[in-house]
Image (tube, rainbow, N blue to C red; front, side, top):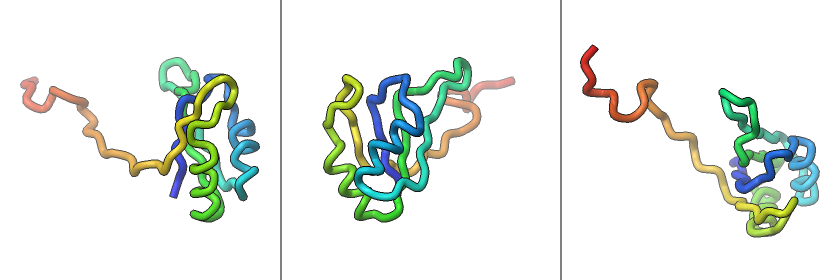
Length: 95
């Protein structure tokens, strides 16, 4: 399982997020996606912990908590959706 962490300040680093979640157990991995064009953080991230119990505790304690002036949105991450390489609305287009 992985944890989704939303509404992050754009200056948050992987170390910052790891430090917060370490209070609830062993952090295995932190991923902060960045915008492809600007390289800027997108305002959300994913955290993986050593056990589902640790992840559940972190979710229940941190969801809605204020950190760095923002109210965190913390919940189980959903599986990534498969998107077509063409994007929306281009399927019937003739070339």
